[in-house]
Structures are given as C-alpha cells and as structure tokens.
Image 1 (tube, rainbow, N blue to C red):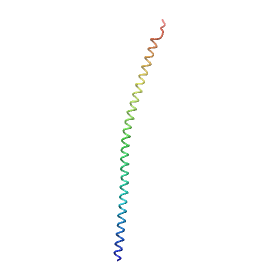
Image 2 (image 1 turned 120 degrees about the vertical axis):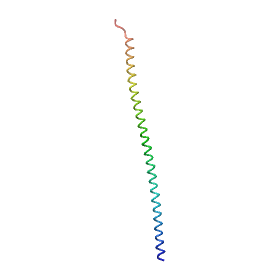
Image 3 (image 1 turned 135 degrees about the vertical axis):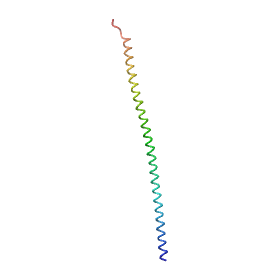
Length: 93
C-alpha cells in the first residue's frame, strides 16, 4: 500500500511539474512573440527614419536651390528697376 501512495505522490509531482513546464513554455513563447513584434517595429521605424532622412535631404537641397534662384531673381529685378529709373529720369543736358 505504501508503494501505491508513493507512486501516486510521484505521479502527482510529475503532473504538477509538467503543468509548470507547460506554463513556463507558454510564458516564454509569449515573451518571444512580444520581442519579435518589437524587433519588427524597430525595423519599420529604422526604415521610416531612413526614408524621412532622404526626404529631408531632398527638401533641404530644394530649399537651397529655391533660395539661390530667389536671390538671382531679386538681383535681376533690382537691375531692371535701376535701368527703368535711368530711362525715366529727366536728363540734365
């Protein structure tokens, strides 16, 4: 009889250990899924960061080109206004 009780106790301990192992495995898989999701999000954010950096560089270069063009147009307008003033100015003979 004692052997049957010992066997049942061992069987119960084995069953409890199996359940604990199953719970631990599920918790581990859940944590790994979270890590995989986080890694995927980091990769997406890194790709977005690279794309945004390229877009910013393009926008900055375009802004610089527009600024140079604006300065050139402004200079030409000033020159044209000076010529118009010269033509319209009364001559002193």
